[in-house]
Each structure stands twice: as structure tokens, then as C-alpha cells.
Image (cartoon, rainbow, N blue to C red; front, side):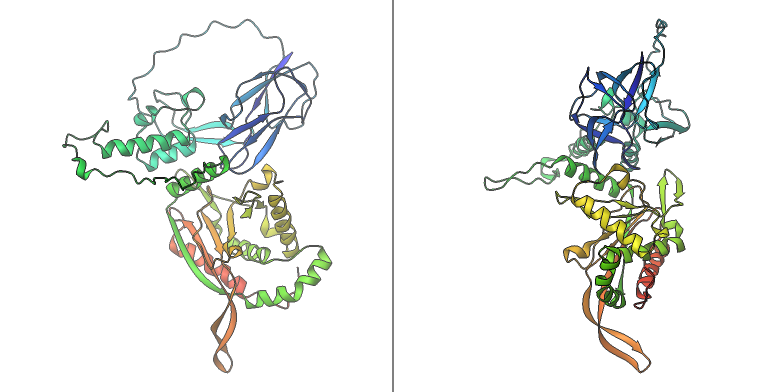
Length: 459
């Protein structure tokens, strides 16, 4: 008899935890390889966790609605000798393959270190679908053995929270782990304590009089107002957006692009394209094609930041914002977009958009993005200032295409003509993308679009 640990899988590059929605199998139920054991949800997508082995569920460690960190053991599966094991057990780790030996005497637990013990800098990486954690750098000498996720550490750094102070924050996660909600609640209490002169490290200055005390803005609901509680996904999206603004100093640049030739080409080609390839041709694959070309010209846009290290991505994986049935947006990813022709991009865009609308995206569809494109013109907006999709460092928005009078240079001189114009914006992380790089990249995308050959046949 052997035991296999079922662990919380890693569902995306920036996902550090997931919420258990439903246990399909219960203690005592038998399972086969790839049988669904439970359903989980992240801020990106809902998914099913399959069994990595044949066996019997012997223990469930978390209940429904529990939020569990990637890599945590969530259940134990007992297997018989010679039981079938999945080719690539992404969520299982063997505990033992033989009868357990008598347990060794437990080592005495050393007394806890003083609460003010410092913590040397530590980088934590999560890799693979098993959420394996690897400590890089100096050793953790903190008085607390709690694991702090990269998000929590980023929030602590942004708010100038020392390690000693971080160790004192009560956590609601497993084993007292601090999560995003704990940090946000603590920061609110911390801010209020300074406002009221009751902070632990407050100076000896006399407290402000009641007339000078600032109070947080509140919105009182009258009897005619409707109070709507945020759903699970909306809460997660809200946290992700706040985290992105806290992590990256956002700068946004704008250009206006003449896409008349693209509009003319699409109008002349769309019927033939659909008949020949069985796909609709929209503007999105044309925009993605130009973005992929510009990324090859400016590879430092295709990076992420880890501490003080810049990680340049070799693959160009472009995410595109798509609507879910609930109205929320999700970002499926077109992998190796620079290696696809226009037909391949059109097929990928249509497939991902259709599956997003049908709520049929898979976890792998939203993983690995290195750059994001969002089309605010879909909603009739002429421009936008999008928030970076962490851990990427840039996101582009394209606005509505509108007919406008414009100056056109001809061999006979400048003329006023009706042209199809569109605003484009690029929000970028000013820690690693300066104005020259961000502005030059955006202009290059515009140049590729304006140089589009309306007589092209290579699709």
C-alpha cells in the first residue's frame, strides 16, 4: 500500500493560490487515472483537478471554499502495488511505496527566536504544475516559518513593512499564512492607526484634535440603493488590478494611426477569406501580427521582472482580452504568435474568443503570456489606459476606427481627405521600460499597420 499526495496545481504564471469549488470525490471513493477529484477556481479560470493514480481517497485536507496555495497537499490517495500511474502526474507526489517503518522519535523543537529577528532577503520561485518552491539567495532567519508569497512580499515592500512587522500580521491561511486579504485588512488598520495616533511606532507628538482627524471616505447606502456583494471572480480581479498598480509604476503613451488600407483590404477580402478558410477575418489578428513584428524589433518589451532581475522571454506569446459569459474579461494567450501567418492568427483568435464566450477555456489557454493586447474599440471607446497584466511589463489598447478628415501628402501637394484613423495606447512598467523604449515600440507597431499592403495575398 502506498500513499500519493494530491497537491494544488499551478494554473498560470502569476497564480499563487486557488479556491476549492467542489469535491467531486469524497473519502472512501475509488478513483482511476484522470478521474476528476475536485473543481477549483482562480482569478483566471475554473478547472478540474484529475487523479494522477488509481486508488482510493483516504483523506481530504481542505473543505469547499477554502483558498489554498499552489503546492499545498489537498488530499491523500491510497494506491495498491502496481496501480496505474499517469504518464505525467502533474498533481501527485508519492509519499511511500512500502509499509511505513516505525516512526523515529521526534526531535525536540527549538524555542522560537525573538520576534524582532531579522530576515535576510529571500526570493521564492514557484515552478511547474506541482508548485515546487525553491529558495534562492540567503537563508530565512525570521522568527516565523510562514511562507510569504511573492505577492505578499511585493505588497510589504511597496508599503515599507519591515520583516519584523510582517511577522506580526495575523494570517487567515493555512498554518497562519498571510494572504492578500490579510494584507489589505492590515494596511487599512495600519493607516487608520496612524490617522488616530495609535500606531505602534507612533511618535510622541500629541494626537490630532478631533476637528483635524481625516476619516476614510465612505458611501452611505440609502433605502433606495441596492447593495451588491462582489462575486468570487470580481473580488479576485479587483485584487489583481490593485496589486498591478502597487507593483508597477504605470506610464501610458498614445499615437494615432491611419488604418485606411487595412479597412479597405478587409472589406474586399472578408467574404473570400471566410469561404476559403472557414474563418472570419477581423482586425485583431492584423493588430497581433504587427505587435509580434515590433516585439522582435524591441525584445526588451517582452520581459518580466523578478526582484532586481529582468527576465527576457524567448517566446512571443500574446494575450488578447476576451469577454466571458458573465461580462468579465479574461486573457487567453496565442503562443508563438510571431511564427503564425495571418490565417493562423485568425484561426487562433476566433477559437480562443469562441471558447471564452462559451466558458470552455482550459488552464493552458491562459498561461505563459508575455504581452497583452486589448481592443477597447469594441465598446465604441476611442482610447484607453489599460492596467498591466502582471507579471508582464506592457499592455496595448486599440480604440475604435473612425472616419476623420486628415492631411494627406501627395505628389501634387498636401490634401484634406477622409481617412480611417485609430488611437493606440501603450501602458508600460516604468521600472524597466523607459519613455524612449515604450514610445519607440508603440510607434513601430503603428508604422507596421500604416505600411500594410492592401494588395497582399499572403495570408
